[in-house]
Image (cartoon, rainbow, N blue to C red):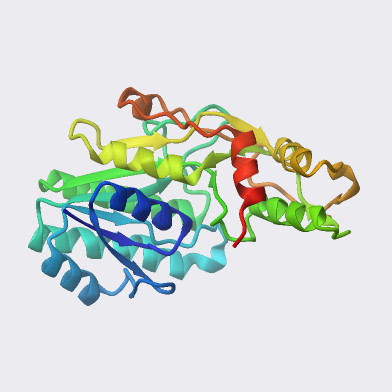
Length: 291
């Protein structure tokens, strides 16, 4: 059995690769950097050749720049939008039995502060949301042509493999340095903002759960539990036995995109998957990790 993973070098791709290998699934990873086959999902010739040659049982489209900034509009469209077309059309032509996973996001839904499910209405408040919505409609269109396409709407998830510009990883890495003697100050925005702090490995197990059945094709994949940035500070600094108030100052003129972003994972829970790593365990994993 084979799996193609586009975006294999990100945190999700790394954990998904490990999960596949534990299940005796051969992984063909594609990324623009890292120790994988170098390539871009926006290149139709590359995508077509890989799918035609390998005829994989599963294909995962994880490649993206996870930012809502307008400046990333072309890159988001290339990786998410064009990448989705390239994969789905190549599957239609060369490997119609493949199961295809398209990554969605909690950020593409209207957010009124309530838990978000896959059945809630889409939003178009950012170019990121707009192109994510486009990729979902493509998945649905090709599903109508007989392809086995799946969409998992992922909510905030963390790991030691997270990039350092994400706030939870920023705090965890700073806590490591402070524990070692650093006197640095962390500049943060609104620490009352609440979002999920789910372990990336748990989320990728949820993705695999979705693909192991044929009845449900779209699901919000998250813990359903929201925590504030202040909660995360408390957990990280409790581990190093320091008072975070001594190391944090507010970022001037910061405006948060939302006050809360949380999933309603009832559908994926109905398939037997639940997030199992609690926030205190995740903080320990990230604080104790050594690169």
